[in-house]
Length: 113
Image (cartoon, rainbow, N blue to C red; front, side, top):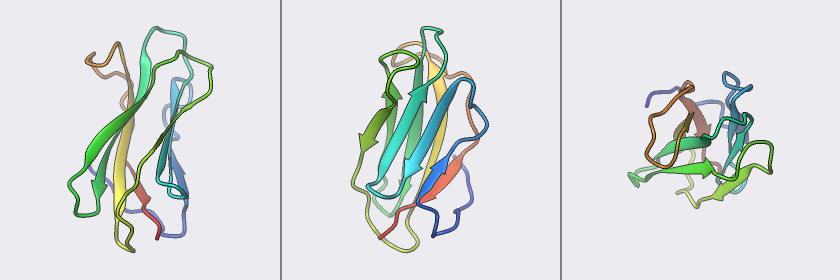
């Protein structure tokens, strides 16, 4: 994953390139990822993330309850700091181990403190 840190004053960063398939956001107010499946295709929408806070943590959050339902919100507790951020990207996949499709650009969200 690659990306450039966004402005530290930005609290919510959302993908803009896959709006017709899924939405993904990182909300620094609460360290939450938000994933919303927008297409009835039998696939799940996923956000994959990496914490750039010295912890080495990685993970993913998936909207698995079908399209056009409430978005999935995954709440994490990242290490606060003025230079700490998360890199994240979105995609859709069939099941938990399916091949990734409609992969987004990499996005950066600062972890506010």
